[in-house]
Length: 385
Image (cartoon, rainbow, N blue to C red; front, top):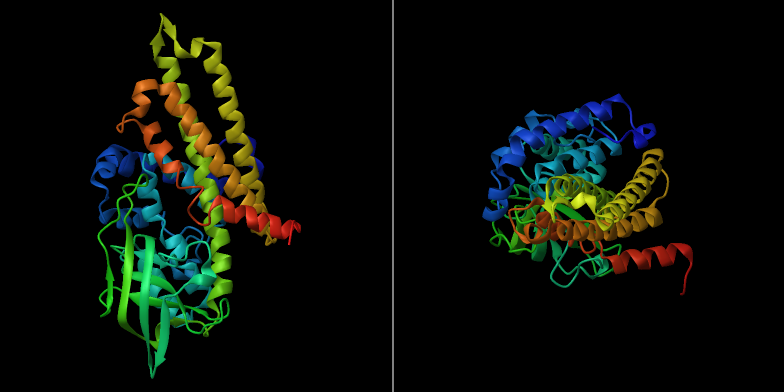
């Protein structure tokens, strides 16, 4: 059940969708989460099941197979699916949320119809290729280059830490088409099986273990001009817009992870007895839980306020950066407290809070580091140079 404290942001459709996602998480994810984490993979068949359950692409337009929902549908989806017990599975299923928006924003109608519906039906998997070994948060430093050759482009370069990279059928790739740092960037769609396109084996990670994360390699990779999204040089603005959506999602992962860790902690300290009484019976425990619950509510409140601004169409660059940083910090602290409350069991990989703690560590890094978010906040507020 969704917290009634936030009911003024939501309508009946959000509550119905949350319950649908929660049922899916409990039925199709939770029983297998530990095994998938240990295997560092989850079945591709889950994409089709998620699509059949109406979960993939809830906020994409209905004409392309989406649910036509708003940003709060996406947030309550994260809050429900996190209860499937594996952030890795959740982000793997959700990689389309960062891969498809450039197609939706820049693509022609033919391109949208060609690439978006099969992904939202769970028939194909989409990934976004931006980060490189030498260019993460600094998009202007991207080196992957696309050179026009008649009716084609020749793509050379590498992409790193790409979610769904090994299994993706469609990769939305940002490449350099001129030497201009910002206006020289262009998006392309590269399809699986294109000669010169390859991916590494799944990279080994601290957390998000069940997700497929890979390095992509493009060597003399020839792609047709019709796979270019928009005109040359339109990629930078599109990726900046994409970042806002991704960072809002990561902020939601933060409060959702912390909220789930808090709930697990509340359950455990009521059941676990030490020195003849429940762990909840100690004041230090109750005060720790009070602090954790306050942090969760604060992060969630900030995120919902920022999401409401996004829904209104406001400029939220500064607010999203603040929300991402604060929620990442809250997730780290609350999940750490949860591990401590669980004691020795909190350190075991079979325990949910151990997984949430590891997974939370990516939040200050992914989608733009804490340091980059602080620089954005400083610039928008006019601090320094």
